Image (cartoon, rainbow, N blue to C red; front, side):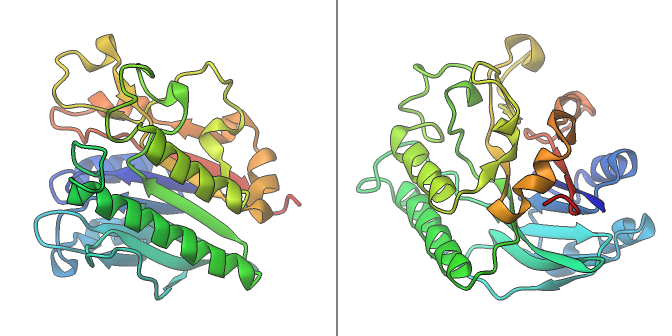
Amino acid sequence: MQIKVATWNINSVRLRIDQVIQFLTEQQPDVLGLQEIKCVEEQFPYQPFRDIGYEFIEVKGQKGYHGAATVSKLPMERLPTSFCPLDHARHVSTRVIAGDQDFEFHNFYVPAGGDIADPVVNDKFAHKLEFLENMRCYFEERFATGDAQQILVGDFNIAPHEHDVWGHKQLLKVVSHTPMEVEILNTLLKTHDFTDTSRLFAGDEEKLYSWWSYRAKDIMKSNRGRRLDHIWVSPALKPAVEAMGKAGHEIHVPCRTWHAKPSDHVPMTQVLDLTAK
């Protein structure tokens, strides 16, 4: 049984609903995690998703900014979780039922962290670090109970690899690629042996980006991107990713210039063969 999961920081789901529907229609993922939806639950555009077969929808909204939503063709149930120390709408966790199997789908919008990489003088950066620590503690508990069928997706706001940014040396002091953030994210990754699916088959020298600033005049020509978006799987699901090979993973770069007003992020997809062990 193959399933396809996706993640996309859409930067306002109501403003870009046509782009999301186009993407879902073309790519047909079974589950999509959206971040930065910028609306409360009552304002979320449920009907367009249901019209194309995404009947199961879980939303954590906030007026004006933040927010996450997971839409699915497969049945899912909400999991009670709390990661954000400021109680922002930054995650949706669900259990997805895929035939006779199920897995947890954790959809994250990690805080950006402001401009100064110092938690003492920058409250936003301190908030980011605390959010990541809460993630670490949560998954430590989940793995302690033996519940290891996990998929983590979202805008983590950290580009951990040297070639996840356009200029490694230039960005070492820029929030999202600082050694402190990278170390914390890699600790979360390695402690529970998660697999970063973008890097599983990509060579060390391969540049991978999922975000480009709105400030760039010619985005693809300058190509000053960062890979802030991620899909991770727990050890129990690594064979499901490996079975699909490099073709099972895609960062949908063309979506960055699809429309006149795109998100600054592009969607990412991963196919898993749940029969692989």
